[in-house]
Length: 350
Image (cartoon, rainbow, N blue to C red):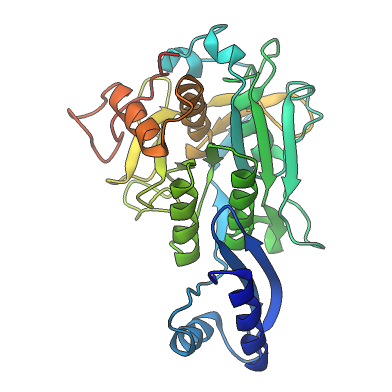
């Protein structure tokens, strides 16, 4: 990361002289910095390159182009059983249906030809590098349908009148692994910031990364509320990111009986819980299926945040976050805990 495009251009020339390949250089005005993506010299590994770069340029922030994965854990077929909205008391046919707010989604591509998404207000954009195959659209399509699915379909969304800005960052790598990159997420967040989007759903996770940390901090400072999946690494796993960063709202998953999802991460970074076990939603192509994972809990919180924002358009991100925390229904031991955070999400009074 460099402070400006001019700084990044000058830095790229110095790096090229040291044998680094400058694969991409882009100004991200909404985040307030310029981003370089580098290839390391032959014979050098990433840790060695980072050590060398940090010593040579101590005033510049360098980190690996960390890979992130969707936080989906399981899928299953069956007949639709819709418990999630009732569990949190979502207002069916009420203010939520008419809310025309903007929501950002950073995920796989979304299958806009799916019957529940046809005619919805969806603006897609890809941040996948040229020549890299995109991941199948199943994950992004499921999350998108939970947010804006047609109200008269079997997969009715929480905010069907919302405008969804869908940033595709996940590609298909070796071994059919679905991954997105740090620079892809940063570029997507910058685009959403330029569109004026204030609530962004991040149903993804990965290890800590200083570029991702600064990106999240800048996005929130610019007025965005980032809602991220808390992870499916198990109750004894360390925090995942971006959910683990302080400014980001972390969402865990519960089932229809208000029991915690057994594979969900736990920790003091958890903000709230939402339905995320056997949640029915769309799949790429047509039809639907059950989905499990903190990925599918996050959009309930994103929709609630967007609904709160529609009622208070000037509210800063931290006020929205605090309102959702304070309005949660306490679960587990009294007060905040490492399993449920502040408790079960409740929709705001609109």
